[in-house]
Image 1: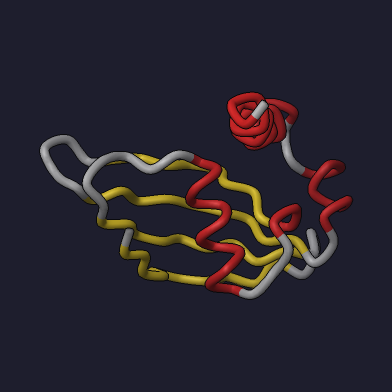
Image 2 (image 1 turned 45 degrees about the horizontal axis):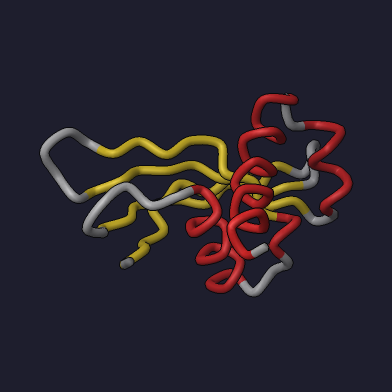
Length: 100
């Protein structure tokens, strides 16, 4: 998976960075995989990274995404909508269930 940052915007009011990125891969990557890749590239803890959107363009291997990187992981639980929290947590829970 090749990831390229398109833009980064600092949002001091919500204490986060808003990142737009592009991924070129064989198929649409999972949210969990993208979270881990972003956390590794930005050198932050995984619980600070929240994927807002992943959109693969039809007929291409290109995925455009948006993520929020919080200064504190607990802040995201106050700011992010419940469905975004559930989407990001569901990926982690499903991966843990496969290991058992």
